[in-house]
Length: 405
Figure (cartoon, one colour):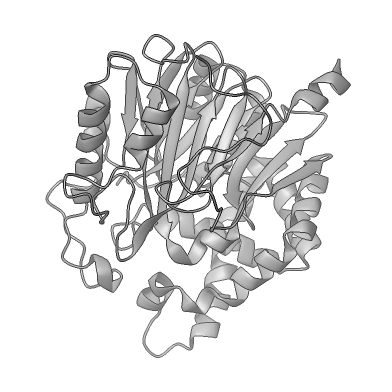
């Protein structure tokens, strides 16, 4: 039996939202106008995040001892803009226009938006590794719905959860997109487009040095705007200019899906194994393993306090193995069962830093997303999936599709 299709339905065990309800921001126009509307509608969150940067422990750890925090943040923002502006303008001018619009709409210094992008690049460095994720995809043959399903837990410091936004972007020149992102960002971490193409972004940590300074979140946004099928998106992502590492799950409305593993200069592609794809934060493609952080690497005193002395890949490996164990025993997988796996707290039943539903002292599951590309349906919650309900967006592109007909 198919899941209910009514717009606005929710799934979850808690009758009360408790956490912040997901609001949909509807943006329309060219890329500058999309950015301007984003900045205007999200201005409070953007300005609050900028004013709160001094409270981010990762920045505090990186700051030289004798430099005042405010001066360090200002210098870091200007350096980030100088390092990225030319590369962004040359490779993804639409996203540069969107950033300019965001800054204008929010009445914010654009250099701070570049600092937010620079934070993403810093995640590829062993000193940071600010974030992690677990994602899974089920192809139509393995899915109890008879159609593909994707799910992703976005693990990040709790500090950032108030700044998550879900936006619907319609532009006359590119495909319309429904994405989950952070208020000041032009790019996105997870999204789908009007064709049903879905991309989910887990952080990877390639060690090769970049030739350009463009975060993968902008590459994901560009792929959703330009591509309509999995194979088209896989080629675009592998060939795209970027810096940093990523493990991307890609699926389209036909059920074709693949994982794309990226470092700054190299790429690998994984196909489903017995109808399943599972992504954590370590490379599994043979050609990519040599560019990964060594498996015996540990966080040092240059990282945040809660991570010091922990093996870098420990959580990623354990989350991957647990997802493989739980999903591998199911002949078919329903959406409810898929969600249950991503609410899992391990054998002990107590969530911790190494469980799929993550409850660590620094990293925690701050957002969870389910995508059904065939029916263009996305379910989003800001918080742990074990204690939240999901806001359900069922084909929000439909009015746009009618207007384009």
